[in-house]
Amino acid sequence: MEKTDIAWIYPARFGWDDVSSWESLYDTFAEGDEPVVFAAESVVSDSPGSLIQSTVKDKIVTVNGLEGFVVIDTPDALLVCPKDDKSIDDLLSPLVHPKYKKYR
Image (cartoon, rainbow, N blue to C red):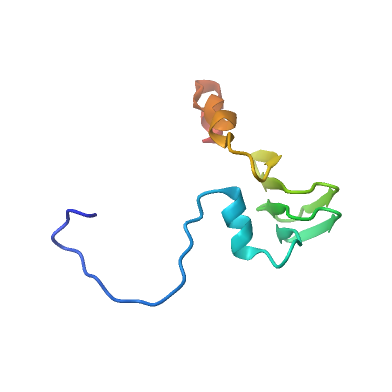
């Protein structure tokens, strides 16, 4: 994009946050230390600083006692890890194996 001759530039004024980690994503939506929850139905208690998301309709997400964790639930995968986990690449690197192709 930087080398194109056919781009248009329009001035705009809006906030910007480079969401580069679970921490920064949490901070974008957090109100205090409350958990950030994106789910159709949920019961979340005693889980301050956590980021919880489910993309599965007709499923209730119940979380208790996870402080500072990320819980991401999709139809074909579930991720649970500390929100400040700097080794997410190491965690996900085995997914390049051919047997995990359907999850990419």
